[in-house]
Image (cartoon, rainbow, N blue to C red; front, side, top):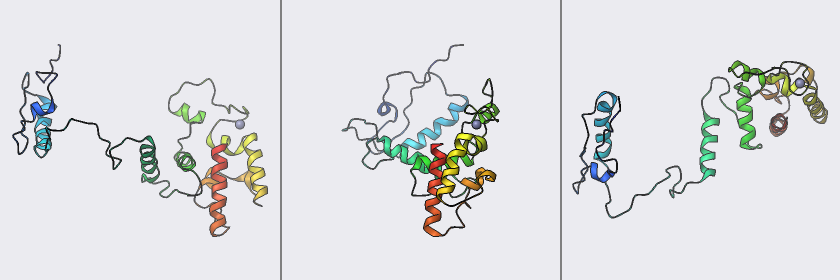
Length: 208
Ligand SMILES: [Zn+2]
């Protein structure tokens, strides 16, 4: 059965339907039929929403962008908002995540890493993506999971060995993802150097 449009005039403007009487708005609908089902429930809510709207008939309509004070759309501001929502989203795994020495993209990488949301083959496979193999695409020596790709794959291990030498650390062979990217890493060193070390580790992981 063909669904007829509820509004009789598809070209109707908001001002035609809100019944602007000079002081406030009232619904002045022109339905082609009585609203039923969900629409019937939503119509009173819509009417409540617009009763307090003051329409300036002198001005033309325009698109506004509420995230920015001067109404101008800016991709940078949108990106900042998404970053902030992502990084501040309450999670039970990693409540606080932040290191202001690294770019936002690195913080997001670590957040995704901790949430097991990096697109390594085993994770893609778990999500039902059809793959020929879930073995490491670099070395083929093991299943491509985060621990392998980021730490134990030969290429990755070469990088970590150099970084551990540089910082006088040991134990990379037995390190886990949460050893490297969890809160505790670097806590043996103190204050500022722990933060710098964390920045080095996070950035290296991001680049790997
Ligand atoms: Zn590998």
